[in-house]
Image (cartoon, rainbow, N blue to C red; front, side):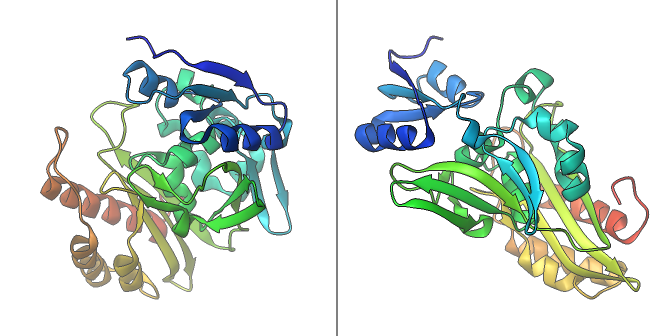
Length: 289
């Protein structure tokens, strides 16, 4: 397959990119890593008149930490996150998630900003953003704003990005002492999108789970926090009784879909399986603890 014809312009700055988006509206698309966009173009699922290249914008690069936690520039590549010692210390859940993203060639080109903006419901970074209570830094005609990840993802490939706006960075708050994590996903082949996945965090304190966060992906139109299951586990020792209540709550709050990979009921079953495995790690000394 070949993409439709389009014009191409390299943005000189973030403001220039915003101006071009404002001028061309829905007929323009940003390209950075291009790992999702190029496939969409080649299959004629997208046919913009203009591609705006933002790959040379240094304002969108960089991994750093500050008083409020970790900041990842939108152009940070998946492979950079995987190799970063800063990320490994500040948000080890992301280090655990990165190897699950497609294949090495894609990790070397794809960017976190592109993944967040594309908002594929079976992708890893949107789920991590929810689990980590991250916020998305957005630049647009009205300036810069930050939106909690819980408000940013709004539906199937839908986000809070407005006209002329782009993702500038992802902010992850400082993680609490004693926090444990587990990232897991089930796929038919390594590198495929997840049939079901889970990014899980909790503080283990005095033999009990505190502030658990369970972000499931691949089970609906967007990644979701399993708030009912989280409530059942919060303050519990993660024993069989608490886990049974959490699984029952999870079954009720999930609204998965049928497709060629799995039925809705199979997705519910797999989600409960991942929840049990995650709790075993969060309460014990598992590999990701």
